[in-house]
Amino acid sequence: MLVVCSDTHSHTGHALTGRTREAVADADLVVHAGDFVSPDALDAFYEVAPELRAVHGNADGPTVTERLPTTRVVEYAGVRIAVTHRRSGGATGLRMFGREKGADLVVSGHTHRPTVVETDDVTLLNPGSHAQPRGNRPGHAELEPTDDGLSGRIVQPDGTLVEEFSVLAGGRDVLD
Image 1 (tube, rainbow, N blue to C red):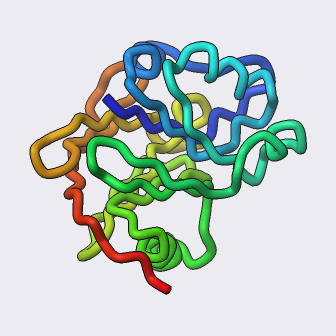
Image 2: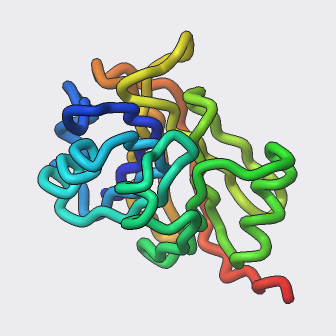
């Protein structure tokens, strides 16, 4: 299982609770879309996640940003995933970022709002924040391999299902 988190905003640890903590510990891979805030939060994720691929966010201090890239591309179960904390231009900017990276799925954070947007060429996923939802539902995403991509769901830390979605593996071309 692939688990996607974002916007931890912690000075003392990973701030994982309930289903979110269980999912991160059970995952094959954890992707984090930034804003750990402190190196203690980042290190705590490395301790609980079997494998972590992360980017830094706008609220991360220098001790985090020097350890993580601004963007990255991850492959999981044949799906190409482009990861960033945020992108100017909203959904259009994220879609262009995904096309530029040849991605099937774009993961972002920043808004703290769990969101899935399916476009003609890429799926946009913001898992929300498991720790500081700021008036939104708290959340993380869980994705399982299927024959043609991934089956996903956004889940709250208490286990409540927020939304289901799918991502098709497409082998899209990278724009020059």
